[in-house]
Structures are given as C-alpha cells and as structure tokens.
Length: 436
Image (cartoon, rainbow, N blue to C red; front, side, top):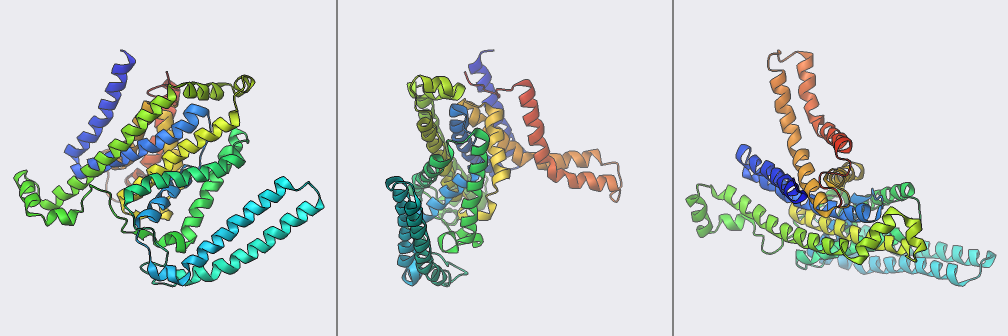
C-alpha cells in the first residue's frame, strides 16, 4: 500500500467515525466534534511547527491560546464608555509607565559600564517606576471594576468585526512568544519546557484576576459572531428558512443550529486549508530544510554558519501565532471568554498527544491527530459508560462492583489517551503519518 493511499484511508476512517456519530447520536453532536476537530488540528499544526520542525519543547500551549482569545475580545467587544471615563486613560498611562520603566532599565544595562553606579541607577529607576505605576494603576482599576460589575466591570474592546480579532489574537500570541523566546530559547529543552509552562500559568492567572481587562472568572459573554455566521433566532424568525427546514423534515430549532455549525465549519476549514498550504510551502522550502537540519544536529548547523537561536526564535513565534489564531477562533465559536477553562497541563497534554499520534514533523499527520484524538476525547466517555453498563448488566444495582465500574467510566478519557499513546509509540513511534 502506497503512503498516499494509506493516508487517504486514515482520513476517510476518521471522518467516517464523525459521520457515524451523526447517524447514531445526532448531527448536532457530529458537527460540534467536527468544528472542535478543526480547531484542534490548527493547534496541533502550531505545536508541530515548534516541535516537528525545530525540536522546541513548548508545554505552555494554553497560555498562547488564551492570549489569542483575549485578542478577539479586545477587538470585537464594544467599548464600555463609563469604564473608560472612570479610569481608562489612567490605566493606559500606567501601562506606558511600566513599559517605559522596563525599557529604561534595559537601556541602562546595555549602555552604562558595569559597576555600582549602574546597579544603583537601575534599582532606583525600577523602584520609582514601580511605585509610580501602582499610584496610577490601582485607583484606575478600582474605578473601572466598580462600573456595573455584574454586567461589565471592564474596559471592553474596540467594537470591530470579530474576524479582525483572529489575526490580532495570533499577533498578540506572537508578541508574547518573542518576549519569551528572547529570554528562554537559550535554555536546554527541559528548562525551556518548564519556562513555557510557568509563563502560561502566569498568563492565565492574569486573565483570571485582572477583571478590568477580561472580567476575570466572571467571563466575557456575548462575543459577536463572524460574517457570514447567522444567529439561530434570526433564522427561526425567517419564514423562508422555516419553510425550507420543514420541507426537509427538520424542526426550525434543529435546522438553525445545524446551519450555524455548518457555517462555522466552512470558515474553520478555509483557515485550516490555508495554514496547511502555507505550512507545506515552508516545510518544503530551503528554509524548512534548514530548520530540520538544525533540529537534527544543532552543532553541525551552527558550524555551517546558521544562526540557530535566531531560527529557533522565528519558528517559536510562528507556532505561537498559529496557537493564538486558534484561541481567537475558539472563543468566537463559544461566544465567550472563560479564563477558568484554560487548564495548561490537561489540554496541553491533549494537543501533544495529537501531534505524537498523528506524526511529528508531518503537517498532515498533525491534522489527522487533531481530528482523531478530539473525536476519542468526546466519544470515549459515553462509549465507556455503555460498555460498563453491558458488563454489569447481570449485577444488582446496589452491588459495590457495579457502582464502582459505572462511576469509573468518567475516567475512560484519560485512560484511553494513555493507552493510545503507548500503542502508537510501541508499534508506530513516528506516528500514523510519519515525517517523510
């Protein structure tokens, strides 16, 4: 069997599983899995760029995804006029002071000769800048968060179309990756992993606690939908749509939900195909061959005159931008930003399983892993519950073993992910679609 036929059959199998869900459960469930599979595939592409192209071990995936979601909120949500009047400009001034303090300290470190005078000047600048920042920042934040805290309590956004927020989310994640990369990419791979995880935790902690920026754990709801995705209520109020739905044997509520999910699937598919096309062009270019050479032997590549750290920074920024783009698309699909749902260890592990199972270093493998693992993540628990019910069908309802097995079905997800990972690493260590 040729690799092309094998890969086609693997994709056909995965999409067959999703389609079978529509017949067995419902098409709403199947389209929900499809949409999240598309987003998972995009996230897996971002991680594959960093690990598969360059060997960078980033386990701060959820931090970049969260920043992408914040970018969508900043662009798409309407501004809260009262909050801006209460302290918006003062917050901007405080942030400018903070940035100026850091840049000033960096300038002193680089331009002043080492010695006691440089250390004293930097320390003085940092202390004065910190207290001036807090003097501006704290009263402004209190005033902003006091403005209708149950409904707003934050500055809001720019009120622009949410589609603009998708690249802005990627840009925000890329800027964070540049800052992280400038400080952490010189570290060994295990230290880089620890650094990225810690920074992801910091990003999520900021989103949870800075209500003036993202409403914290109160969540930002009502994020506008992108064109041309309609709202269900609008479709249900259209006589033409209702008539077409009834002619197909569907009630208007179900038909409107399916239409919205199909519209999202179309948008996400366009983005995914564009990213795959660009990724394949990059991977097969001289730049891509250079990145793989650096990944395989950094010492030899550096001896040939390649700037390894700079190339690592490039690919780290590109992969993080893709993760940020996926994060902006995710909050658009959900219609809300929920900082509490970003769990770095849990979902970062899931994205890594997608890349490893699909095939590290192969873009199509990462996409396949995204669809397959997300399908299993959603469907394994109900399948496991059904299996446990069949196994314990002959036991009495109050028997301790039956109760234990039924309750254990909720843990089938993590068990299945571990088993799949072990099986793939044992029998196909390079993934289902290995790097050529």
